[in-house]
Amino acid sequence: MATTHIKRSTSASRLVNYAEKRAVLKDGHNIDADYAKSLFKQVREIYGNQGKTEAYASRIAFSPKEFNPQSQLDQIKALQIAKEIYATAYPHQQVALYVHNDTDSLHVHAVIGAINLQTGKKMHGNWKEYREKLVKITDKVVKNHGLSVTVPQPRAEKRTMAELKMREKGHVPWKDKIRQAVDTTMREAHISDFKSFKEKLGQLYVNVYERGRELTYELLDTNKKVRGSKLGDDYKKETIFNELDRRKQYHHERNRERQGSTWLKGRGERVEEEQSARLKLAQRAERIQRETHTRTPNPSQSRNTRQL
Image (cartoon, rainbow, N blue to C red; front, side, top):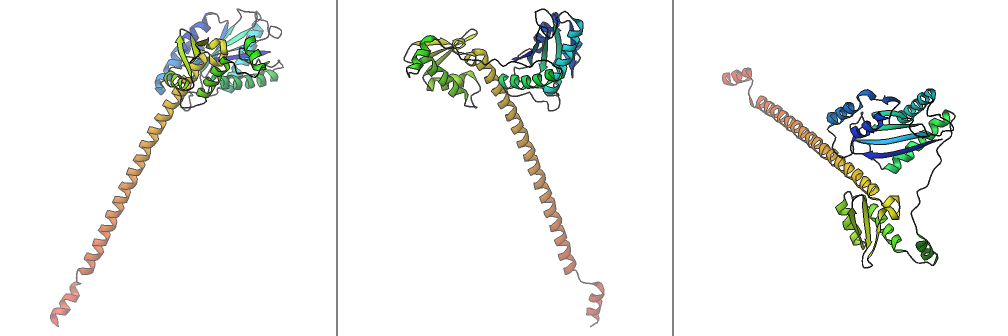
């Protein structure tokens, strides 16, 4: 069985440094793994891509029942399978691959460049979508190699016994009110920064505070507070901030595209105006020539008139 993981990162170099230290084998898709850091940087500079996210950290772990971490043949096979998976999932992106055998499970770390080499744009979506896509491709590839597929592990919200009892009685637990407020807020696609996130929650009678690596939510007028990690993974600071950052990048690139298309449209309109003006001038010149030719008498006609 192969299990898959993916999350965004603000530093491609940091991911490479970590993965290289313990690697027993390495390879790359659209990149030379020996020069991964400089090549990731080169692509970012070429496309001038802005935003915090530089790369995505991913990992595929193989079952000890199917791969022996200490076997060189298994290490080579795991790397080949991983390369096939990531080349299928990200055909136009740089992916540096590193095989690790420092745990019971042989696993491959992947550093995925955020920029599409064909379009110059960053990949958009959220980590859930990325993981679901990667899991489907992983399952298909490993199945073709005669391996077992990923067993899905649902991410349940964390609930206490008190909450469960309140729900049984038909009451809405106060933590559920906070969850509902956060869910409602994040459904609004235009919310792309912490300030607007906080303001919208305030309208729903929930305060939110940053506390180190945590977000603390407070239900107004009750003095009841809870950390995001206690509500479930979807309410953690990392999850919320990653999604807000993704939206901010998306809006930034959409605005840049819109400005570019507006300029191009304006240029097209200016060209049309110039062509129209030249056509009108040509038509006017032609009309003047015709009128001049009509008014100018024929020389032979003038002599005949004088003789008469």
